[in-house]
Image (cartoon, rainbow, N blue to C red; front, top):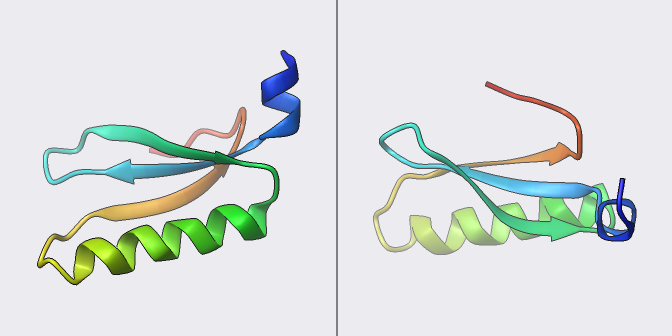
Length: 63
């Protein structure tokens, strides 16, 4: 594990309409990541786009 993985272990992941997953942010705490994921989802929701956002810890996998 490198230093950036230790310092920022929480990821915000976005899944688009085609099922593609993208890492869109990396954060130090789960709370910070959850807050940012909500902001991103709310921002895009205002423009009529439906995207799925969630938080993962480094090393965790979600399908």
